[in-house]
Image 1 (cartoon, rainbow, N blue to C red):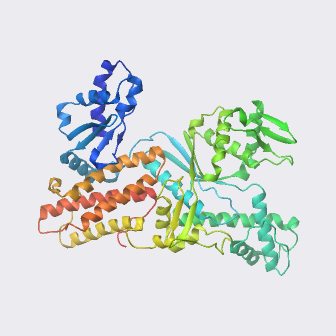
Image 2: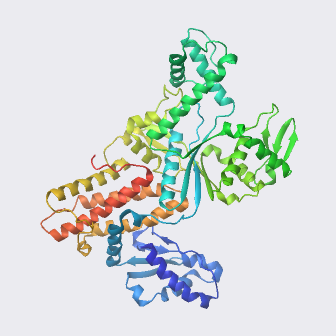
Image 3: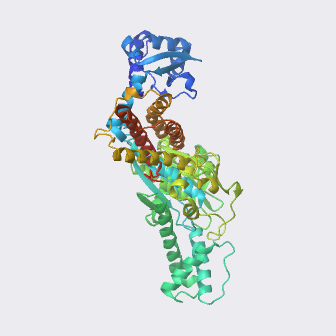
Length: 553
């Protein structure tokens, strides 16, 4: 549908270019009006041409509409100019049915684009410290990152998924000290637990596993045995992180170790490169990067007085190295508390003469976990927060993922476990999956009654679909490609969750009012075709979100 409207307007604009005495035109963006009374589709091209043409946008809109030829006008019931210069289209039923037929013929391929063809994107997400279980904040970042990877891949981008392992520095050492203290307890020795040590049952679980393998072998001092104990604890935490993510349906193409970057000398090389540009200096016994010469509000320490590199030094090397790998765009998904870090990294890219527009950050806001409206208490397993695994075990990966994607990433999210377990319209993922399961059940009944669709999927005369609820579904189906493309361009997976809820809503309203299988064979075939189209779109939308489409509930 978008291509047809875009093509019509492009022809009109091309015929006006000479008259307007301009060479280049802005992209034509087809939108879905928020108010159905305004039409089926809308264009803002007239407003976007105002500055270029120095004309009233309504006058521009009128000129564009006048240039649409009579044959093309036959596709629409009407074209209206509204407000400051919106061009609103109300599409004829036959045109919608043509789009429905195309969907049935091409299936999933008609719902994807080659928008990102030839464009390499790297998305780094989760990147939790390997010192404790994943919490629900990590889970939301994992859901958003995974869905965005799926969306961009379906939009034709070459996508790499990366997890950055923060395995260098004091936090990993503290993990080792915490496990070592619990290990000594198991060995029958009293030892003072680190004041800032990691608490929770998972630390004791690692210590028990170590003791089961090594007995009292390391029951000396941390100075003598801390190395192997820390390595064991770190590796077990990494295995657990990977397992939790895999069970959540989130996989990575690459796990990048911060420690390995230090071992390979990449951090030193990056700081030396900045030094060669005159951007490194010494002050108060520390080494500083002149980031305030760029977007940052002050200079930053890259090497402390004790000679240890800061985390920022690692980030300097890491982000330079990511663009050196040949990615056209790098997307980092961070917690909202890292907002102040964005100008620092942009300063790094500027310092290395790398295009900062290639760097994008998506911020993930906090999640409040509730049970029937009441805050959930702390977890015994982690010691101070509810883990992602605990939530998945209670409500399932699909529901957890969908709830995390149910609002814009930078909006605070209330996750109510009570609602998440309801089998009702209050539970959005159940509502959508139930629509898919209902369709599957209808096709099973149709097969049993000999009314199934033929191999070509489109087994009916779509012009027979005349009910108001049928047209609501057909119109909603026609919107998916626009919603999908918008989600890809804006990097906002929640647009698809909103859309799927709306599609499920119009489907359930139709299902509850109209029989699909009847004595009228032609009408049955047409309605089964409509059901098949809904099934295709639901399945595609759920797939890019990383959520399953069950045939039975």
